Image (cartoon, rainbow, N blue to C red; front, side):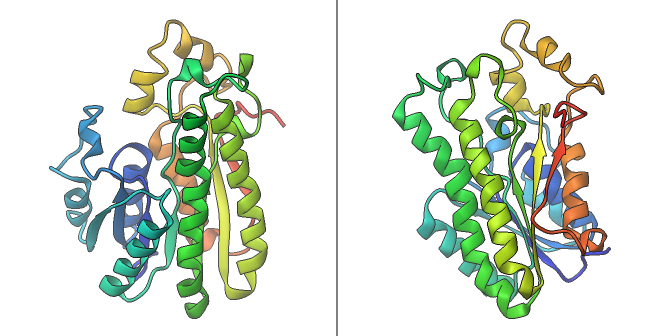
Length: 265
């Protein structure tokens, strides 16, 4: 129960990696705020959960939990969300920026071909959403002189995908890494640590259906992973746990690849 008494806000937490983060922090004693653009998004990809909603799953672990629907790419919605969290819990200690993903079709995500609407939507989901959430929590965390922020980048930010697909997603996630480093410098004097997880290929219901189902794609990607398997949401959550507990008290501004060895440098 290392995080008993803390309040954690997790974006994009109604399924997949975000849900895994929420359950892991709840088991450590934190009260949880689930944000998602659709709080029942697990149904879209038929992801199996153990209760009707993720909020109910979390409450079943003996902590408080609320759900807030909202688009992190809209600054006003983010500010309203953080205000509601502070009204409900009186403080906010941990922010996990997990919401994101590619907008549009994978086969239209090449650097020279991606439609403008897909580029802008991808930047909003990943980079602008991260920035807006960090800005909204910074002042309350400064006042209490303690906070933990964990952003989410991607392998696509560190090495170009073969052939150049996922281009605007990689650009957005590269921006997340740069923003993490700058924010960490600014907030360190206030006792606020800002770090970043960088997943590679993670098996979620969404990716299994939209990407890994393409002919030969999954097999090809696994050959790039020395550990010989896709990551799981729990693999990412274990590293997130490191960044929000006392294990990382002297770590800030860092980006850690969780990739099974796929990032080779």
